Structure formats: C-alpha cells, structure tokens
Length: 259
Ligand code: ATR
Image (cartoon, rainbow, N blue to C red; front, side, top):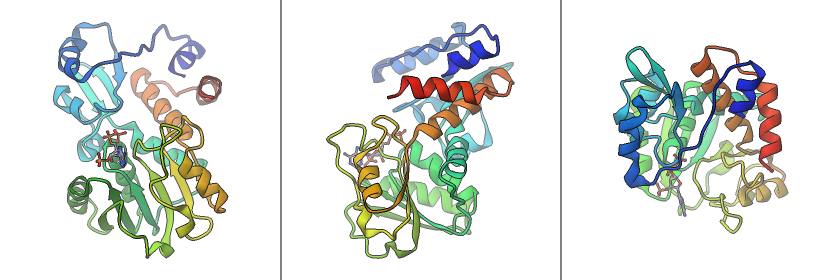
C-alpha cells in the first residue's frame, strides 16, 4: 500500500517490515537514528513501548499514550497517532456513523482501544463503555480520559458481565486481538443488542471475524478494519512526505494484497 503510493507520486522510497522480538526492540530503537529512515510505523505490541524512544509527541499521541507513526524531523523522532483519525475517517465514510450524542461499547484496553475511545470522545460521544478481560487496564484508561473529556460518561467493565442494558448502544467496536484466528470466539453476543447496531472489528484478516458474522446474521450493520488500515496509512503517508496520499491507489493495492 505505501510502496504503491510512493510509486504513484514518483517518490523514491521503500517501506520495509522489521519483525522484532520483544528482547530486541530496545536495540533496534537505539539504532534507528543511524539507519536511512525518514519515518516508520509501529504496530502490535510496541505502540506504547515506543514512546520512551521518541524526542517529541503530537498532542494526540501524548493524550492517547500510543504511537503508530514516527517521522524524522530536525530535532529527532516525532511520534503521531494516525489510528485515531484513521478509525474516525473509516467510521464516518464507510460506517456512516456519527458519534455525537451516542452510547458506544469498546472491547479492549490496549493501544488500539485507547485510540478508538479517544476518537469517539473527541467526536462528542455521550457515553463510552470500555470492556476488557483485565478490568484494571480499562479502569486506568477511564480515569485518564475522564480528566480529558469530563462531559463524556465513562464506564469500565469486564467482558464477563451480563449485558442487560444494551438498549441504548448503537456502536460496538472490537479493539482486541480476539478474532485474528479463525477459531477465536466472539467476545459478546450480538443478539443481545438492538437491531441495526453498527459492529466494527478492527481486524481486517480474516475479513469477517466470528463477531462480525454473528452480527450480520442478527441483522446488524458491520464494518471490518480494512478501512481503518487504509485511512491510518494515508495519514501516515502525508506525515512522512508532506503530500496528499493517493488513496485510490492505496485502496486498490490493499484489496489485492489482503484476501
Ligand atoms: P493493540 O495495540 O492492538 O491494542 P494490545 O495492546 O496487545 O494490542 O491489546 C490487546 C487487547 O486484546 C487487550 O485489550 C487484551 O486484553 P487484556 O488487557 O486483558 O490482555 C485483549 N485480548 C487479547 N487476548 C484476549 C483474549 N483471549 N480474551 C479477551 N481479550 C483478549
């Protein structure tokens, strides 16, 4: 997707994967400034850990506490979070969903969930429920975001709780890694939600997780993570190159690469 965009605009650049084991991350980060890198993306599970190696953070990245895009500038590495805006771009354009005044449920409390919850709060969601396997992690996010967005009604829950008050929820976002494997379960039952709730899964491969399949069969609207992947990538491209991303080219490449 990124290399297709570079080619389309005649930019001589490569986008290379660096697969790093947890024990090697620090050593790689210590080397990055000496490498011929103008920028990079960071993904699972390093989006939070990378912060300590950066020289500056954008206001969003600082508030969210997670970085997925890094740009070299005169002062060193600057960290951004394009997941948040990329999620919103996709939610509005493809999901035709506007968060203002809505009640939403976010599953997860990792870097992705933080970006999603921040975006929904920034767009004026009325009530945001964070449900996570480890309750303390959801609580930590809620207490941080309560200070940033005091008008939002924040709640934290475990995934085991019974969902008896789903009536007002109009959006459910899976921001956990559950669903990546085809035999993964759905963390909640879509049948318990009002018809036409929008179910979003940030996972794009498989293109339909069990959660989205059950949601579709229950008559809900569904959206996978492909749109967010594209939109966060387009925003990263703009940060690295200062040029408008050729989104159509990027979408086409992505669709042909991800089956
Ligand atoms: P990311 O950067 O994509 O958010 P992450 O920070 O590793 O990745 O977060 C992964 C999320 O998936 C977490 O919310 C995690 O729950 P815990 O905080 O309890 O670890 C969730 N997750 C991973 N495996 C899970 C499982 N088997 N059941 C429920 N939640 C799971």
